[in-house]
Image (cartoon, rainbow, N blue to C red; front, side):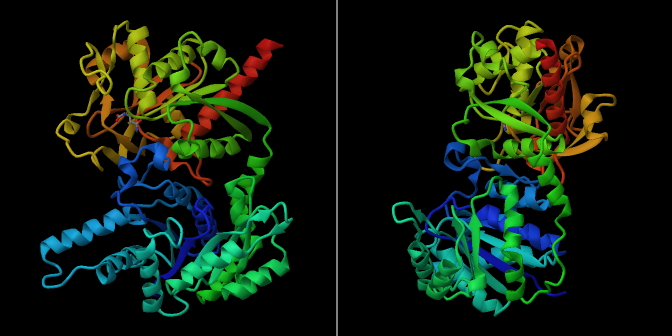
Amino acid sequence: MASAKYIFVTGGVTSSLGKGIIASSLAKLLQARGFSVTIQKFDPYLNIDPGTLNPYEHGECYVTDDGAETDLDLGHYERFLNTPTSQANNVTTGRIYNSVITKERQGAYLGKTVQVIPHITDEIKRSIRALGDTGEYDIVITEIGGCVGDIESLPFIEAVRQFKWDVGPNNAIVIHLTLIPYLKSAGELKTKPTQHSVKDLLETGVQPDILVCRSEHPIPQDIRKKIALFCNVHINSVIEAQDADTIYDVPLMMKKEKLDERVLVKLKLSHDKEPDMEGWKEFLGRLKNPSEEVTIGLVGKYVELRDAYKSIAEAFIHAGAQNECKVNIRWIHSETLLPENVENLFEDLDGVLVAPGFGERGIEGKIAAIRYVRENQVPFFGICLGMQCAVVEFARNVLKLDGAASTEWNQNTSHPVINMMEDQKKVTIKGGTMRLGAYPCDLKKGSRAAQVYGKSKISERHRHRYEFNNQYLEAYEKAGMTATGINPDTGLVEIVEIKDHPWFVGVQFHPELKSTVMNPQPLFVHFVKAAVEYASAKRLVVR
Ligand code: GLN
């Protein structure tokens, strides 16, 4: 078996240039040429994982099948490649130090002084190889978070330098992503920041093989020549990455710039077959030529930062394309919602999604939203905390259980319809201790869920500590809210539905995490479909 080839993606000049999208796009093109590819992300911060970070700090926490709490870029990797990632795909400085220090305590380095070089860099190199050594991949792409020149990313860049040397030429390359700003007053694209950023890389002993240059304008030949000259790269390896309408355009833009071809030449891999991007192009065709349009209200408490709901927003794009429908998201802060203003705010919505979340802030707004959509037959989709709020709303307003709540925000409630899971009660450590990752779920025959998924057994990903309190199940089912998805091993309620409603579904899991371009998530697809039907029925009434 030939060993894997490695591609490192670094970034310079500024953050937020879209390393994750460039890495995903390149991976997509290589996959479309028949290579087996995976992408991993190294994050230079000291948290062991982003699970304990506030979404305002770092955006959404993306959960993998194996229950790892990871960086949101892994979501892009899965959405583009349609293959699952795992803990090995996301490593932080904290995780690296943690394992070195644990080994030190176990005596693995007895007698030695433990140092950044070689111990930390060796551990980084081990993590780079972890995926390649499985034998599953032809190519491993490693995205290094942060910017070159940052103190924090130095050990990673040093490990890349060593790694390139260890595996020898044509087995590992470095792609550096930079910015070519346009100076309006001079009317010119400027290469100096890129030159400096490459100098930073060179200072650490790393010569980039390919430069991907973000720019708001096309980069003419003479500027490419200048960049090539100053940065020691071939002019064909200066790749333009202009701003795109949608991130899903980027693979085809990179194909046009021949990024995949340059990579394969440098890695001495065959590039005689063109990438098969037919399915992808079909998706783009549907995405860009919608025949319908709906507006969905997304009710959450982190709406100021869109990245906090990244996977939900992307799942709507996939589901919209599938329905040939443009899905506009109206971001609604749950704290602004009151029973008195819901009607006004929701008047022109075609569906409402109540988002996942933690803690008490904004809960009453979410409950007011759910009451309105339940009573007014507006399509509703509740995810995790959104499902729990739907359960509480039903208890208060249909079952007439005054003061019903989740014990997450009211420990002394007389009706704990949502309660902490038994095994969570013993948990004292915060990081990585929720119910995380993929669990099976059985769907009730004849339910909406079973019809939507088209099967009776599913597996979805989780991230929660609280659950539906089964002591109340009978009362709910009698009153019209049924549990249609159940974990076969624990009896935990995974899905609730209301039958006498055009679309009222709450799920304890996170379906958005498994939506990909090639495999839009069925609940999202059918929720959008319900919104389209609701919108056209509304038009008829207005006429
Ligand atoms: N806070 C709730 C729980 O822990 C919901 C979590 C979520 O929405 N991801 O159960």
